[in-house]
Image (cartoon, rainbow, N blue to C red):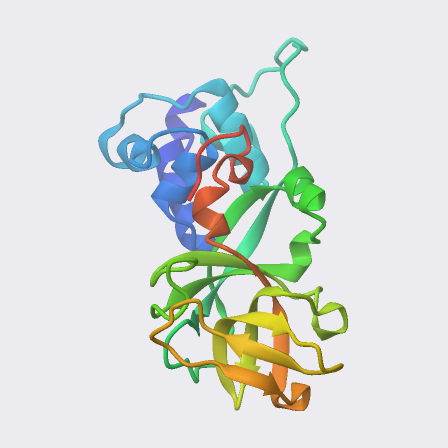
Length: 234
């Protein structure tokens, strides 16, 4: 009965901890202010989750709505706006350096961000082949600044190389730089947008391992598609 059921707040807090999520990202998934989930869990405000918020969270975590406070009785069928398929994109622990470069190749996920799968497909990327990484340094300013988060498409590699911003490895160092194709066939330049930082002109492609193109600060600027209900996620 109701008295024997575990508090939905405790269940939600446990799910967040187990999945490596955070309060702010989940709040934005619901098109709520960043403190919404924390206030619900820690302060009991609101007293219970809105019906559609509960539905989105249950679908996101893959659990029954009843665990998050939904009624256990059979509810009448009702029309509601369709919910987009929500997928998670991993946040990798490494940083793509826009400065001197990072030597860390540890690519363990330290969390995830929620995106509408249909929106990712609209971008032409496969959800399972992208990741979010943080920019370290200022060599790509003003295009990318220290602390920006970028989405990297691992499927779109060297065989489709074109002008643009890429995450790459050069001499074992992971970095984010601008690729500029040159007039000499097979050669390209690796450039910094910040004129205070050096670049490499007409570099031998054999020295560069292309990880994939980077969408500039996508995780912050393209807020709406990251939410199950077109909310503002960052």
